[in-house]
Length: 261
Image (cartoon, rainbow, N blue to C red; front, side, top):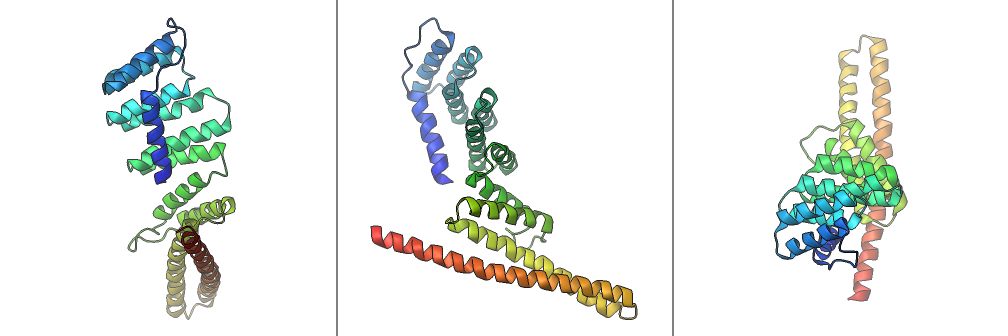
């Protein structure tokens, strides 16, 4: 995540100080871009944003100028305007890869500024154009896991969101089976799901005692008890496999560091 943010910021900074190309002086897009670059060099980011906007009115398909405009807005602390600018190139291309990259940049910007609801929306859009995007899958798993209560010891477990989180992590693992953190995050989600099944199991146990004179209700509760017990056992087996894989990846990472250090 940090590498992606640093790449984004370095790219935007580099673009903001890049010399203007050799377009004809009468080209309004080139003219306003050049003026925007001049203002950027003077750190007049408001004027730079205005000039880049005028350049884009003349040529809205110039992805680099959208990024320049985003950088100017970021310098002004205008996160929403920056995100809008980063996402605009997706409107002017039919290339799914370019669309996905635009939405990933938007999502990463929102994550950097802790606007997680907007980040989630952007990652979901990126995934529409690149279903095997590991970054989007991992972050969507994190958002779902948090909604499922897995990131808090006191939040109640929500099986719907935990199921979604586990599914996202599984997809991310299929894309990159060597990402240690995805296995760790999946283990957290499963542990929270076990809490939910344990609660169901305890409730079923209680109902069996309370309704012992009602055979039909006892049978229903027993069925739920059996189901929860089976799910817990299944999750525990999966946790064993996850822990084993995590140890393997940790050992491999340690060996790699030792060989290069």
